[in-house]
Amino acid sequence: MARRKFATIKSFLNYIGVEGDRTIFTWVSASEGERFAKVVKGVTAKVKALGPAKKLIKKIG
Image (tube, rainbow, N blue to C red; front, side):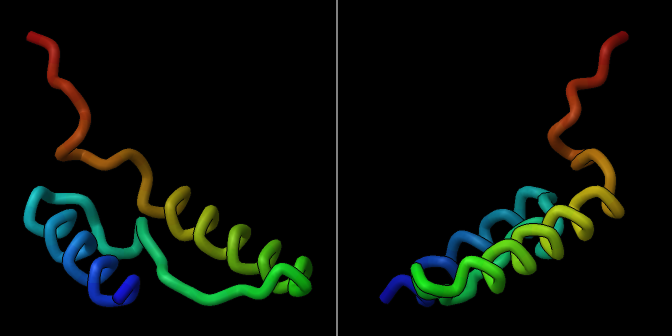
């Protein structure tokens, strides 16, 4: 059920202009600290590479 809800949310985010690479759905066990750290670092790197979400930045002027 969570995976379906996430797919719906991701679809909505794409619809409003938030790139799909800004979100990720994965299973990580509480005992997989190293894997969790790798997932977080990977997502962080992708988001940094994408830069600011252009649709979410308020334009002044």
